[in-house]
Length: 228
Image (cartoon, rainbow, N blue to C red; front, side):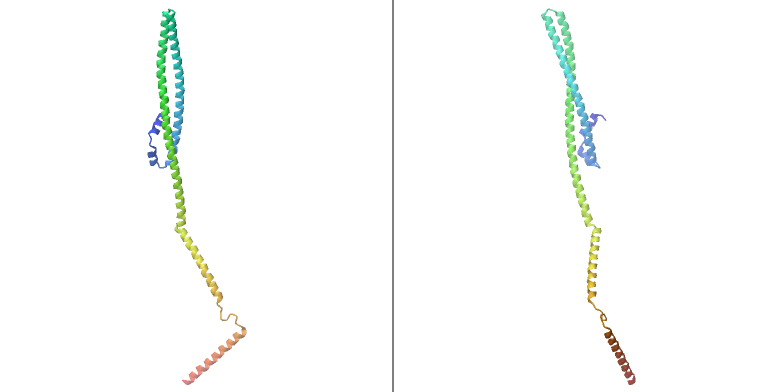
């Protein structure tokens, strides 16, 4: 693609519309800026070459005009000296140089017009590039804000997730079980079994008492049987 075709495409492009339709606006605008910068470099290089050509053409035009002026002076000198033949020849040279001057002046005007057009194109492209870079900064800030919001929401989502709440409930239940076990352990230690700490003599006394009860029960049963 030629530089002027690229330039026209860039200048006539609607950056905002292109970015709104793009799937990846940041990538697209980076490519656009790169294309603009490359085109701008080429435009400036072509403008510099044209300006150099204009300077060279201007020097040639000035030299031809100077030569034409000198032949005019020679024609005047020949007339003063009564040499009309030389004056005629000098005027012919002057006319030829003036014709050349007119041609060079036309070329010079065309070249200067090209330089002016280049300068205008460079200015328009620089404005377009500045606008694109400003849009790039805006997109970057939006991207950073969006990324920050997304990260914050993800963090909040992790905190508020059902899994996290379940883990918290499970931890709370474990603590409650430990507290209950500790309370039960304390209650059990305070209860003393009846036979715990009982002496051997006391156990024999209790055994004798049990025998007395059995004998009394036997007598009662006998009386009841005799009464029948």
